[in-house]
Image (cartoon, rainbow, N blue to C red):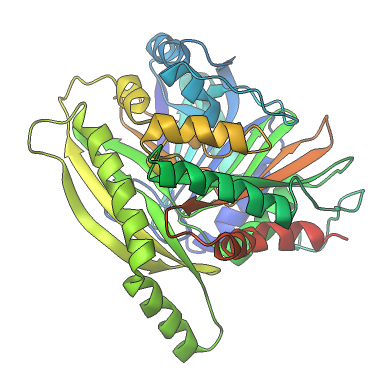
Length: 434
């Protein structure tokens, strides 16, 4: 049972910084931030959950049933993630690639304290057992000093390495194209890893730097003891509110320019790019198919098709697909029927995942997965874990991965350059430490 107290705050931007800094005292943190991009499907501007009352953590084997059982037991808000490797649970696949991050395949926790920002209103939603701490916490947060972005540095330099070099990337994309030309698949999201070993970073400060230059609409910071996610995601995987579900897949990327006229030309070129539109439409069809498994007949609708939205680092082509499901539809079934998201796999989905696994050099883990929350009513909202840094403090291992959609018209050189563009923000904040 929870108790809610609300406050009005004048300087929301400052309070958000204070709130995030205050959260660093806890070993379990989930921070979700719209960075003022909140749309009609959003339930908040920012949301913080800290301090686990209970938690679940498991590897892929009936993971969605485990999640359903856990949610039924706690009957409360839970926050956490679904890793890409839950595909092995969903489709009975395997993953044999190297995993040096060692994140569990699924992780959720029931927080003692939830703090929600909506406009200039701050809602403190605490478990009854800690509700008497609300006034004290609000005062402590309001008085919190926020370190400057350059005030705290890591103890070691960050030296980024590539898991595969350019020539090898070309060779593997060539093999992917062979599969496409044979008809094994139409499209696949092929990814590569960048990593740093024997490295310590200040995870919270690094996230703040990443967020400052990205300002993504589905940003998130996650801490699970010694494991961290620092995400500048621009993409929503799946949102459920009452009996409506919404998916907003992204396919199609173009760089930004500081010159307004050039920037407009880049945006217009992306809007009119036949290859990028074809990639996006393929994934929209896949999402429509996934949602139709549970949707009421005739309710699946494409609300936006190939709309270009502009963020700090890139222009992105996004579509919005909605559907109506039965009010008693179990959330975990919806998630299992649509996971992993089509934008990170390809079409047909199972064939794409098998070929991806054979050609990629690393185990994706949380990358390409989803971070979000579920409410006691069974509503939920999850992002897609892209444009993200993963960090295992015990292993002193930092990783970020990027990918692009490979279709029959793909050029290995163009896809490689797209990957470098997507990697820019993560590499910038990490190598800025050196």
